[in-house]
Amino acid sequence: MGSVVYLLSAQYFVAEWVAAAAWNDPPYSFSDNYISDLGVIGCSDVCSPRHGVMNAGFVMLGVIVATGSFLLIRRLASGGLARAALMLMLVSGAGDILVGLFPGSVDQDVSGSSPFHAIGAFMAIFAGNAGIAILGTAMWRRREHLVLAGYSMASGAVGLVALASFGLDIDLGLGVGAIERVAADPIVIWMVVVGIVTLITQSARRTRT
Image (cartoon, rainbow, N blue to C red; front, top):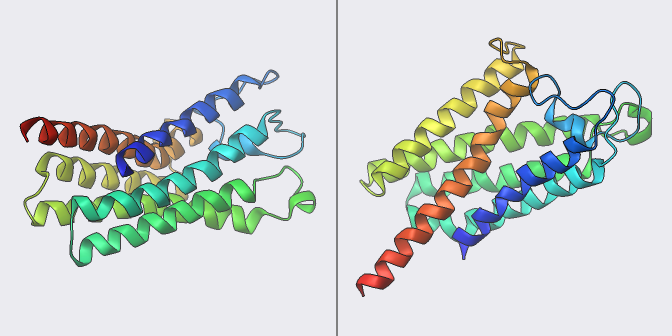
């Protein structure tokens, strides 16, 4: 069940594209615009007509991260590191929900949400990448799912390095939106990959038995 829930995280990318498609003047730039611009409330220098779609996508992603991790992580690894990874993924899910419930606004007097939005974004990205890296370490130490373990450690490390670069305003020539996505998107991609791999593994085991 956790595998299927993880696969549903792909809805986040669908929400992004649907929200971005509504931008006309100027069009949305995946390299130069922040992710949260898609959920911004109100119109000034930034206007996102389908902000409700993006913010709903954030909330749904948070529920998926928390629910899927609770159902699946304990099946991938055990011990203290696995428990730490689960806690971090729950924090990440809560962060995504905060981002959706307290969207950015071109007029902070309207939403008053800026602190909660920023805190939620940090929770989602930092805790998510850290949780993935720690889970990979837990699997590696127990010599379980070694390919998935290596991928998890590498994915989490890339996300954390990109988050640090984003925080230091170093976009590495990619653009602020692109470097933010290098920090955030690996979490969703990781969940989709884990969902597929675990479903295939479970199917193979049932076939053998």
